[in-house]
Image 1: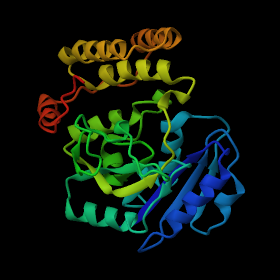
Image 2 (image 1 turned 45 degrees about the horizontal axis):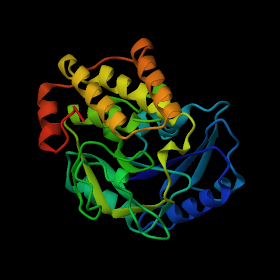
Image 3 (image 1 turned 90 degrees about the vertical axis):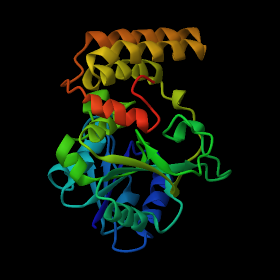
Image 4 (image 1 turned 120 degrees about the vertical axis):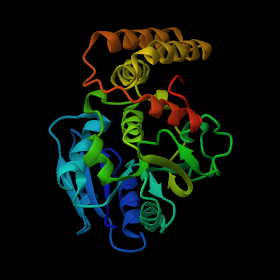
Length: 293
């Protein structure tokens, strides 16, 4: 199976990008073709150092899903010039040389498998943050399992999934775009695996480091529900998340931004509404995460 990789960059981490590209180049098996997308910024020169690296420079920042969608199309319509696409953060690093080969083997062995979520580990401590284990029972990051979502900057997607259900929701810009794609894939009959043996090294960070975090998380949570959930579950899902947000006791400014985003989610267009089937709701429930949390 032919493997490609999409990396988006703001051009401000050239050393990390070089290390990531080196780790991709060292992968076992056939070379992984790479597309680096400069998301409203020039692509650092290091990205042009290999014959298997192509670059695309966008005149404006399209956000994470928008930039990744451009990278997908660089591999042909829906990425169909390759069988598998890796999506990797530009400050990450593939820890092992067999990751691409493990992806080939996993997708070849399981025709229902559509997406693989890698384990993210701190390069110095080896620690995996709880939020980086895409399931509710996240206490053991070394346990692989079927899951209901995946990590945006450390994953592999079978391009047949994108051809069938479409790419990432560009209007989201940042936050929850992976869950939107995951739900659409699950609704189409595909499965998602979390694999602890496929590791991306990434420094430990807090998602709130992004200035738009609280607004985008709230707005996109509403959009996610409006786009994908049966009408009966929309208020349940959003009510649960509001209670969880309040229970975490965010600061006053953070809470104000969150409620502003929540309102924005209801008052602005969210893209096409395609509610999942009730059998998908049951599948999510059996996988351990019913779509109300």
